[in-house]
Length: 295
Ligand code: UTP
Image 1 (spheres, rainbow, N blue to C red):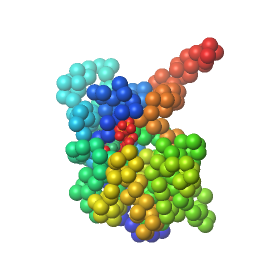
Image 2 (cartoon, rainbow, N blue to C red):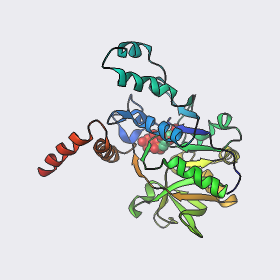
Image 3 (cartoon, rainbow, N blue to C red):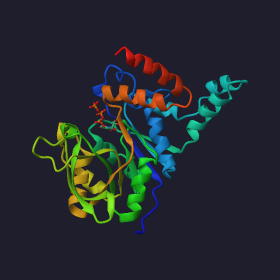
Image 4 (cartoon, rainbow, N blue to C red):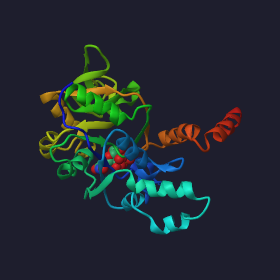
């Protein structure tokens, strides 16, 4: 095992415009869209915390203020819940601001994910940090951030969380040039990657799905980065330079990924998480079985 600094910090970029989920995202950040009863971004904060993270920076933009409110105390609500029968709700509401040390910064223009991560430079300093893409919820037996941290401890290099995606979808995501690592079934060495490849440009159908672990050496690359796909500063382009110069690790993580920036995925995630839900899961399953008979 290599000797690396502990991973205590995470960054959640949540400043994008969410144009693929309009009209829901006209006044409501897509990161606040609920999956049953919890906003997507709370799943991310909980995943980071379960992986050992203590300090989280959320990158916001105009109109994203309710994300800050969600993680703040709510005195009126707390007072209203201080009555018999409301203990569980009160504990839940009081628990949210205590999840982690939360910090907020504004990305003044949504110029791309790479540009958003650059806003975290002062926060992360010279420590390694996780990036959880604000609209990617992943349900997993072991938090995916934790799976990345383990790989970072094994190899001492930045890590990207990947899954094999259908070949038809690779052009929506990115494509990685991977090489097997002897004795490791789910870990790969990465020495290149491409964002939103056109047909013929793909290296593989391994795509990054919303979780990466980086170190401060990414910042000089981001600072000199030209715009890429969609005219945005793409984090993948910066990680491609990093991978070519020093190499990175990819972990084929165990978990189910839900893209909250995509209407079909939101509907699927809602059904799957409702089925697993402690309070309504059994009733929802019974209803869904009946409903499916008429499809
Ligand atoms: P996306 O590309 O999915 O977000 O970025 P978007 O720009 O909101 O998507 P469209 O408009 O529906 O295509 C992934 C994550 O990175 C954040 C987004 O908020 C999202 O959580 N992001 C993206 C930023 O913080 N800043 C940006 O400039 C772009």
